[in-house]
Image (cartoon, rainbow, N blue to C red):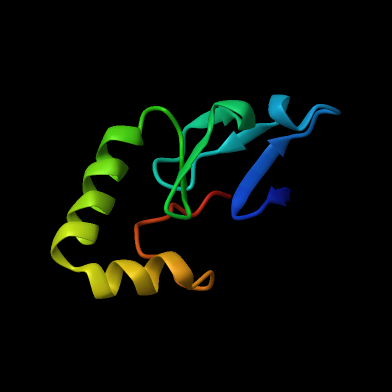
Length: 84
């Protein structure tokens, strides 16, 4: 299984936007072209609202933690599902 950044690719394609990936937040299969990134966190359209609300809460109420999370590529602040 290959990766695009932290996103696992389960079916490759010549056009990177047509690769089928696993959402690291919920585990849904999604085209890479439909994935999004908010403050360094990847997700699929199904997770967008939940992730946006969580990230905005951190930014507004826990700014120091939010900045550390957004700038630390090794840190995974939100749940990531393990996919076999």
